[in-house]
Image 1 (tube, rainbow, N blue to C red):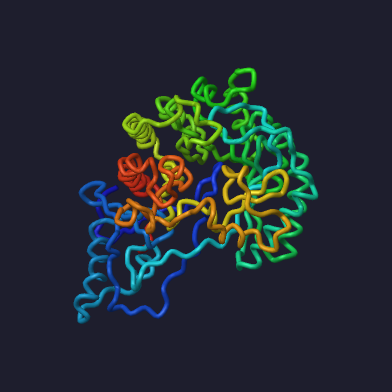
Image 2 (cartoon, rainbow, N blue to C red):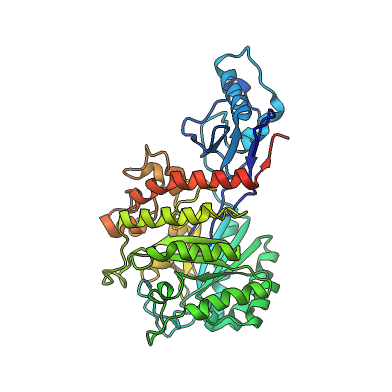
Length: 475
C-alpha cells in the first residue's frame, strides 16, 4: 500500500473468541467513555507497538476490544497530538477523530478496566461415551448418557443463574464424549432451550463439540437450520491426526474427520476447527494450518494439557524450543496466505490478541460444566470433582464461592504475570495447567516462555493482515 498524506487507522471486523474444548470467556462488554475530560487523554502506558514497514506500525491495546490497529505516520502523529493535549492544555487536536482512537483503545481517559462478559456459558455433557480413544483425553468413557429430564433441569439451572446475575445471553456447548452419538437428543433439547431462553428474555448461542466422524448430510443440514454451530477436532494431516485420535482398535480417524469438514461446508455449515498440539504433532502443524487456510475456515490451537488420565503418556508434553520453532514455521505459512478473518486470535493456545481480558477463561466465573448426572463443576476437566448440582438455586454462586478446589486467578494476581506486557492477552494461561505443573493456581502458565516468544510475531502477522484487508476508521 502506498503512503498517503491522509491519516490511516486500519482495522478489520471484530473477531469473537475461538471455539474449543475449553471454558473460554466471551468478549467483554465495552463502551466508550462518557463525560470525557479532554485534558486527561493519554496513550496507555502498556500499549504494544511494532513497526511493519517504514510507513505503518501495528498497535495492540489492552483498552480496546477490536483487535489490532494499523496506523500510518500521519495517524500516529495525530494520535500523539491527543496525548500532547494532556501535557499542554493550550494545544488542541481534531476531536472528530477521537471516537475512533478511543474505540481501538489507543487513548484512555481514566483508570483502565475490563468489563465482565454478558454471556453465561454451560457445558452439557450429553454423554460420556465416545467412539474414539484419544491419548490426551481427560474422560473415563463411562457408558452413561444424560437423560432428558436431567438436561432440561440443567438448562433451567443455567437460566436461573443467568437471570440472577444479569447475563443477557446463554451459550450452550453440547459436548461429551462424542455428542453426535446422541444427535436426536441434542436436536430435541435445543428446541427446549430455545423456548426457555425466549420466555426469559435471553439470547441463545449453541455449538456442538465433535470429532466429526459421525457427521451426516442430514445432521449438518439440521445444525445449519437450527443455527447451531459446529466445532470439529482435527489435530493434523494423515498420521499426525491419527496418532492423536484413533478408534478403539487403533485405526486412525483422519479420513472421516476431514470428510466431515467437507460435508459440513457442502451443506452450508462452516465448522470451527479445534487443534490440539502436542510433541507428537508439532512438526506437522504448518501443513495442517496450510490445509485449513485453503478451505478458509476458522480454527484455534490448544496446547496439550496434562490430566490425571493422560499423565502416563510421556510423549505428549510440549518441548519449548521445538514448539516455538514449529509455530514460527506455521506463521510463515500464514504470512504467505494471509486470510481475511483473524487467524491469529487462537494461534497461541489460551492467548487471544483480538480481545484483552483479565482471566484466561470463564471457569469459576461465568461458566458451568454439567456432567451426565446433573452435577456441576467449574470446568469440564473437573467433572470428577463437582461442587453443585441442578437443584441448587444458583449453581454459579456455589461455583464462585467455592474456596476448596479449583481457583481461577486474574493475571494481575498470578506470580510472574503482574508486570508482563502480554498479560491482557494470555491472562497467565490455564490455571488448571499451572496447578498440574506447580501445585498452585496463582502462578503463570507452564507455557509462558512459548507465549512470550510467539505473541510478538502473532501481532506482526495480524498487522500485515489488517494492512491488507482492513478499513480506515478515520475517513
